Length: 168
Image (cartoon, rainbow, N blue to C red):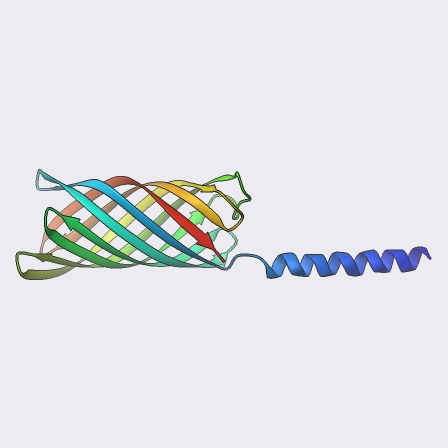
C-alpha cells in the first residue's frame, strides 16, 4: 500500500511540475510613454514619445528585445528601431513583487525636420523596477539615457517614464 501511495504522489508531483514549466512565461510585450528633456549642443527642448517592444526570454532572467519608438520634439519627428536585452534581477514575479531590472540596446534612427530626413545610430541604457500587478502584468518605472548620432551631431536624451509589460 505504501508503494502505491508513493507512486501516486510521485506521478501527481511530476504532472504538477510539468504544468508549472509549461506555464513559464516565454514572451513579453511592453508599452511606454513619457515626456523628457533633450539636450543638443547646449539647447534643450521638450519631447514626448511612445515606445512598444516585444521580448523573448532567452533565460529565466534575460529577455532579448526588439523595439520601435516614435518621438515628437518641438515639431521634429524621430523614430527608431532597436535591438537590446533586459536583465531582471530575479525571475518574473508574483502579484505584489517589485523586480529591479537593467538593460541596454542599439538603435537605427530616422530624424525628420523641416521636410528633410536623416538617419543615424543610437545606444541606450535603462534601469528600473517592474511592479507586478498580476503574475503576467507589471507597471514598470524606469530611468533611461539614449545617445544618438545623426549626420555627425550627437544628442543625449535622459528621462524617467512609466510603462506596462505583459508576459505570456
